Image (cartoon, rainbow, N blue to C red; front, side):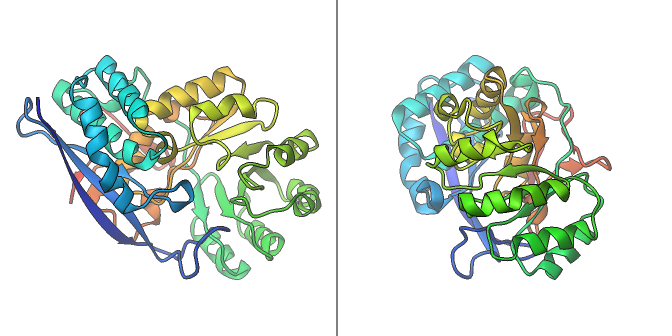
Amino acid sequence: MTLRVALETLQLTLRDPFRIARSDHDAGHAITTVIAEVRDDRFPGLVGYGEGYPDRFYGETAESIVAVMPTLIAAVSDGWAPDPEGLRAAGDAMRAAIRWNGGAKCALDIGLHDLAGKVTGRPVHELLGLPATMPPTDFTLGLDAPDVVAERARRASAFPALKIKCGGPADLDTLRAVRGVYDGPIRVDANTGWTPEVARQLLPLLVDLGVELIEQPFPARRLDWLRDLQSGSPLPIVADESCVEDEDLDGLVGVVAGVNVKLAKCGGVGPAARMLARARALGFRTFLGCMEETSVVIAASAAVASLADWVDLDGCLLLAEDPFIGLELGADHRWRIGGAPGLGVSRR
């Protein structure tokens, strides 16, 4: 059997500048992502699309995704089959073959799921045994001057919730400016940018502003700080950078109320489904997030979104132009995933 994977690195422009608390200097205008086209000689004419987002925070680059892909292909080639058991075996084989490298695993895992769906004529969510229902997605606004963020919030006011990136000196002014033009739930994401002192000062003010949750206020390893904040917080604290793979879940029990699962962190759609289910079993509230990715990852994420309490799947909406078509956002801001086989997306 021959499994062949072609990788293409894309540089994509963002619709608006998008910065977070740990952005590099001059970052926020474009992103780099890696598209995988997965083929199996047993199924001529079919291609499965995958995507790996190389986040340097987790030690990945586009070059590293390309470098480790042969190892991942070799690991899955003998055991992969286009059915739920074969897909799970492929995910287990990738995890056994190499540590971390969630973006690279994500690219191959999603591609295999898309290909399996096309081979069997089933959408990915059916392969995973999940319904097509899901919560609506929020819309994320990056760091910028308060008046600029407020104007973007006004333009995005139809969304049922807004996620506001924080971690800068103008956080409170920004949130007040957003509240001035938007009356729905606000979700705050500090991307490790706060100290305990800042968090304690802001917490009662965030409650007054109607903030719904606080995501990753502190550095990833400061579980002690997260525990202390959650113990005195009426708002749920959600771990993101502190929660990469399912093995991180046990250490977060009693520390935070929620966890943010992303396909690029945990290694794809199959691992995400298992991680979300286990998080719920452990009593966490579940947040399904994304990077600034194309419709490939967003469609794959939507396939497991029924397992999430909160959904932040707006990555493809942040792009000036998505190189894929087929995924549709309903008037209720829920992604439409129906009966099309695989992910239901194709290249423009």
